[in-house]
Length: 214
Figure 1 (spheres, rainbow, N blue to C red):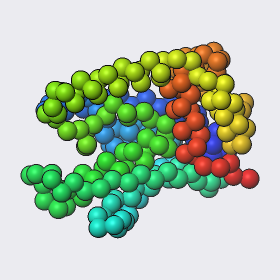
Figure 2: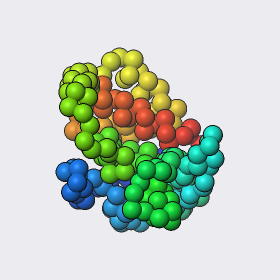
Figure 3: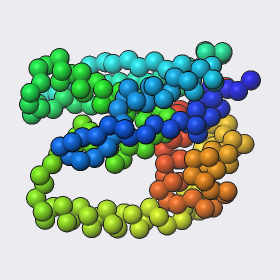
């Protein structure tokens, strides 16, 4: 019988959530919290697992944040893995009353808690925080930075990254299943073919799912 980490890894490797929503103002596509949950439901049922999401208001300094916690539950053994994400209400959001503002913030925090739990990359999504109309000079600087980062991301993973992946996989019981995950997720036959960006994503995923339960 698979443990909670093996079930989570299996779901991560199968989960596909297309960006079917379009922000007409910004001209970009994005996925919502609801999209992720709808795609998850049949895969969760197949793996005899469930997901719950809870919200908590946290006062940090003088501002309130919504802390959303996504909990992955192995319904056979009762084992759990939790990932939390925070979002701060934007005082400048126009056209929203307080309940709408809090609801929007909660949806954003929940989405990123799910992203962390199921290793969903939303680095290009800006459905909540995107700000339009930046100055042209700033846009050019940002493009240069992105181009430089793209070159770094596309280069092959370092030995340090690969050794860290192996160490984390060993600690959390994923040594046997990691090659299959890499193949299914990135189409790579060996970890040596991973890019720096892909290796960083795997490290982040392994770190966020917590320590292996005995």
